[in-house]
Length: 101
Image 1 (cartoon, one colour):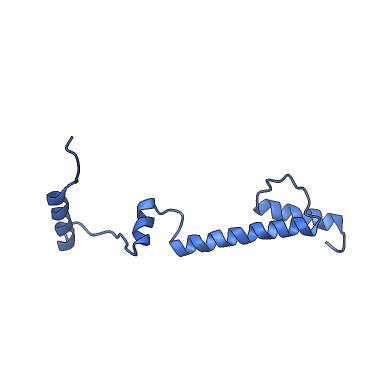
Image 2: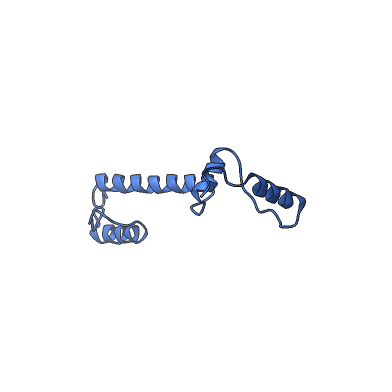
């Protein structure tokens, strides 16, 4: 910014906007205030990625996240195993609780 090289600022701004969407309509980051705004956006994106990594990804359902919040997890149980048969029995005997339709 201090050197004032307009072509370099345009090139660097184009690289920035190729990676980060530019919703403000800014063509060139040519002030310290704009640079700080985009640094804040980059930090926010880094924080979002860190949370995503910590929680296990974007692809989890809300049910997965509720189990994680309870410090539980769900995993596949091979059909035919003792544990699978036991769970199937519980589901069949307990069934849905609530109004009969």
